[in-house]
Length: 422
Image 1 (tube, rainbow, N blue to C red):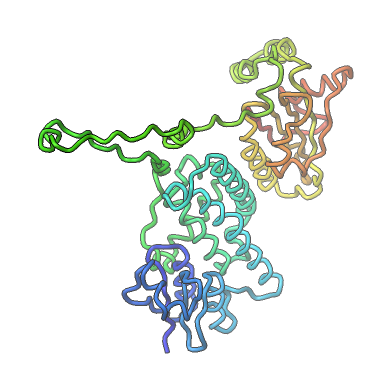
Image 2 (cartoon, one colour; image 1 turned 45 degrees about the vertical axis):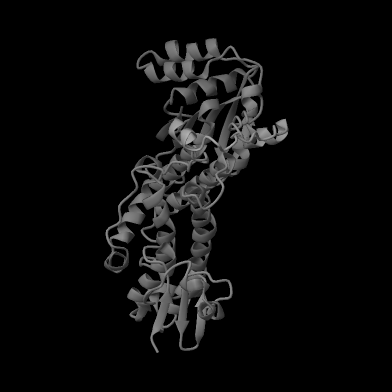
């Protein structure tokens, strides 16, 4: 008996199973004449899967539902299949990335996708939360892929197949080039995998979406006005006056105006004399005499009541033994700080000519504390020790100057790189 797969053509959940079958050399046939919403509602189908979901694999030993479970089953049909790893730790890491792809990537892409395609209610805060969580996941994936071609080991595994299929819906439906360009290693990984022969045989040519679908309109279609000719045709029909509706009921029929987006608590702080964009512009435009122009300008603008300065130092500098991995780590952190761009300025220094490299930074934040939403949403924050700058200490103030201007040597060591967040 052949393995028969009930799946929607062109959908990632079916793709992953069929790609695994290609790598494994197992024949999986697509169920003929399958129609979503019809076939999976029949009594015969519901006997195989009581909740009527797809995909579903019919095997000689009984049916299997849930796409990841089916993919695992197909992979294990081949003894010593490299897709599932060659050691216990490989197997654990493969399972780790499968869970990561399902919970951190696929779930957030679907939360963004469904309202845009009319299969769920569109709520702006929910979409923002999904996109923020997705960016966090892609940032973590990007950091891992900065020093790894594949997720586990040096060959394609089940984890790569499932995570790439998780990314497929995002790349082809929602994530434009401007969105994914923040994650260059994820881009490289995705396009490498979808162009592998076994992927391409199932997926065909994959193209990235050029735009995000608009939110479906919630407006009711307007009713055509009754024409005069129709009124003449029915002169004897007495116009029946509808009783006036209560105001509350009438109000319900009026389309509710979109509620204003809640303000960031930092926008509710007392006005500051320091205009952050003016400082960022001065920093960017100063090419010579940096101390005399930019540094002096910073202290002239700085408002200690409206802003605060913070030093940070990476907690695990002993681990920074590879230069490009360290640089990618800092770059990923700055990408994930994008949510604070309106309220922050930062300098991150990678210090040392030999490993291990030290990562230290200086940050200017609106308000007297590190913004809580930054601490909550940017997981990198907890990887650093944070110390508020004491401006009464001239040594600390001079250290601020040196970090802003990328002074080299810094604290007696060469700079490998200096990155600016502005």
